[in-house]
Length: 276
Image (cartoon, rainbow, N blue to C red; front, side, top):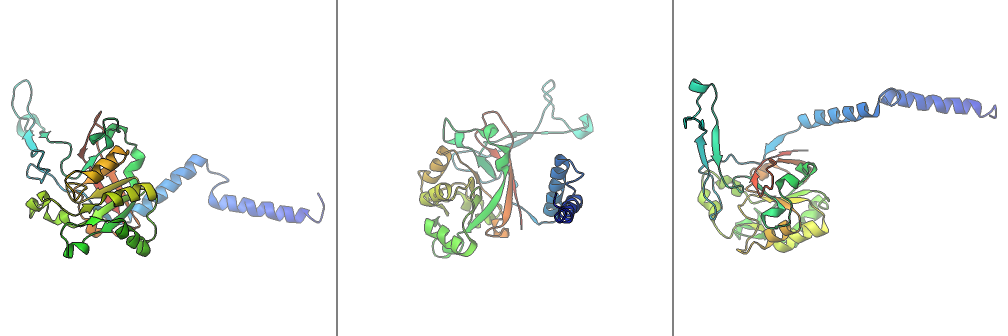
């Protein structure tokens, strides 16, 4: 090596070594670095505000008129027919009888599409997504049952930026406030929901993964146009969401978890938002 360049090379090598040492790259295994990054992610998330987006459900919960109410009953010993109790058996359990589309619940593609994915086939990676919220409540002052339009979405983007690909899009209508106080209002038809044009725009032009809303249905119309389209095109949705009024228009994450019944066509979920 040219003697004039040798000191420069030594200095560069030294600088690189110091950088590696300070960042841990010189001594840590890649898996350890990955683990540290997840630990740091958890440290950050644990300090954020969490908002429960899920209704508590019971036999008195509002449900679509085509389904009946749930039944909660003590589980019984099949050999005696007697209910288990803590006093007698040291433990107790409930037998739950309910339709899959009950409470805050998920509709997988197979709910409408015989070839669509069932609950056990949906990827767990889709259980945590960026969350955007469209607010219909200002329009509801003049019209109690508006449908979100493409124009509404474009107006939202003028303020909040483009809807990110891979997002979960939720529709705020504040219908969740009637869940326990005026459940009959959840049964009305029509109610504020998505237009088919808005649904198609979000999935086809913005590349979102899933949608959710506070009502018991996706549509303002009686023929399930929006719900039929999204489920028959391989997407899923969450219905009867709660507390979207506590979530910002963008910047939050949504986490949705559901059970894994084989061939499942719907089930209550637990959903929550992590605020920025």
